[in-house]
Amino acid sequence: MDPWASGEHLKFETAALTHPGHVRRFNEDCIFTDGARGIWMVADGMGGHRDGNLASAMIGDAARGLGKTTSLVEFSEAFRREIGIVNTELLARSQGRPEHIVGSTVVALLTVDGNYCCLWAGDSRCYLVRDERIEQLSHDHTEVQELVDRGIISQDEAASWPRRNIVTRAVGAIDDFELEQATGVIKSGDCFVLCSDGLTGHVKDEEILAVSSRLSATQASHELLELALARGGKDNISVVIVNVVDKGATTLVMR
Image 1: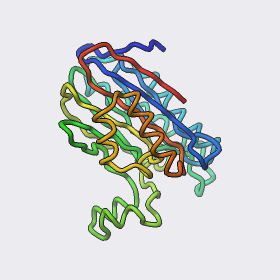
Image 2 (image 1 turned 45 degrees about the vertical axis):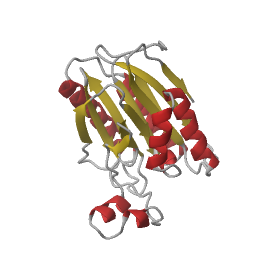
Image 3 (image 1 turned 135 degrees about the vertical axis):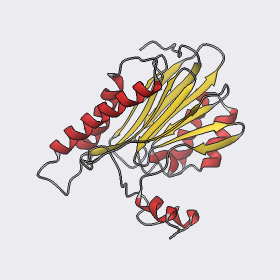
Image 4 (image 1 turned 120 degrees about the vertical axis):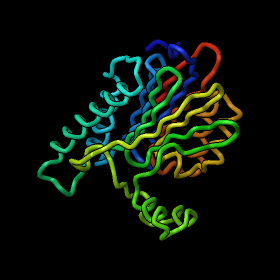
């Protein structure tokens, strides 16, 4: 992988880290970054080590196989098609074992010509840090988020809800599968943060804002990882940071 990469019209400083955490023996997360093509992705596998690792790796392979395009609509449609194929393959793998889902969350950031598209399923997240504010572009597909959306529990109650980790949408979970998306225009100085719930289970949004606003992508990714590990590291932890900068970009992937 060429360590220096940039989009045609924007420069990106990228750093990516993934870690098994302190509790899990294996890492079922998968990260993929390609600044030259404008794609960054995090997938969090489920189904046990062998199956979870396979599911997230298949999503990573799907992202890796995407061709370059000058249309964000075509790019996002191609990503949807590839993830749809993975969904079908994972469903076939768990056939005959309805109680055992071989699946994965996914969150991806695609960029073309100064515009972005965030696509996701599950509780892996994408944040946009802009003008000293943080916005969660993705919306968790979880049982607890549905309760919050319906006004049954508060956001504060959700943080300690017993079933807060139950995912309601994932690649490989259902036939009628659809990625949700959010789109927008990229501004110079923007920072995108993609992560698995191993990070957000320990690190608050305002802490992600504070760290990503004052540090380089590489420094911020390390500090966020260390925060999650220092607070227990109960799950696999993955974080990808994409800073929009005015000079040459670098992509660092550390596992």
